[in-house]
Amino acid sequence: MKIGFIGLGIMGKPMSRHLLRAGYELIVLERNRAAGELVAEGVTAAPTPKAVAERSDIVITMLPNSPQVREVVLGPDGIIEGAPRGSVVIDMSSIAPLVSQEIARELEKAGVDMLDAPVSGGQPKAIEGTLSVMVGGKEEVFDRCYDVMKTMAASVVRTGEIGAGNVTKLANQIMVAIHLAAMSEALVLASKAGVQPELVFQAIRGGLAGSTVLEAKAPLVLDRKFDPGFRLNLHMKDLHNVLETSHEVGVPLPLTAQVMEMMQALKADGMGERDHGSLVQFYEKLAKVEVKR
Image 1 (cartoon, rainbow, N blue to C red):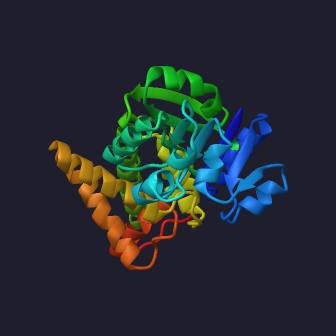
Image 2 (cartoon, rainbow, N blue to C red; image 1 turned 120 degrees about the vertical axis):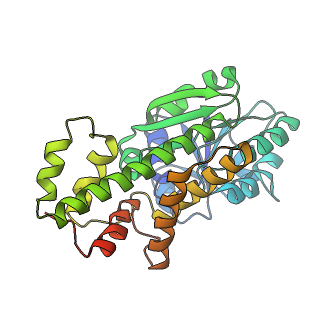
């Protein structure tokens, strides 16, 4: 099976490597900075999304947001111009659900199926091949593409028709954002009260307050490591999509809105390219204390 992959960033590059190691023939967009590195490992490069699609049974996109996905799929020299009838586009980006549905409708006119399949787990799990994938689309298309997605993931779950994958990802990003805020509040309180935050972490991690977010982010905060595994700017993009979708369907999300404003404050302080775990620094600035070992 030939697989096209467009979007070789901090997530896409390790994801594409898992496909290569699994024995799939891989075609990537040559203008991506990482393409040369992958070509040296046996990947084929093509000059446009159209050219990638022409050579592929499945095209995977892993791009920053809705406008980039729309442009790559539907724009000039886009995937839609080259994809053979019966092929599949799997968009693994995190974008607005309504945009996924719009793109899927246009692809369907060209005889091309689509899955929206955003992921959770950040760069570490992309490297490990243990991402969680949330998928929307036709069940028969999901079944046909399951093994491809499972190559990059520990969990691949279909949650409904097209758009449902991104709705699920929005729910995921709400919970991650609020967990990060709760963790930050707790560790800043402990530090300001004179209790070692590392011992607080060890004490609560096995109880009801324990979470994957706590396990992944608390050690990095304690070590003052804010290099991006998942950039604050990207989480803000997701929360923008969350709030936009919530307004469309009539659901108030007061906690999400508050965390979004905290992240906006950090971005204003020049921290947008740091890891989203840097949310702790919003609280540190208010409390005039630093969380560290």
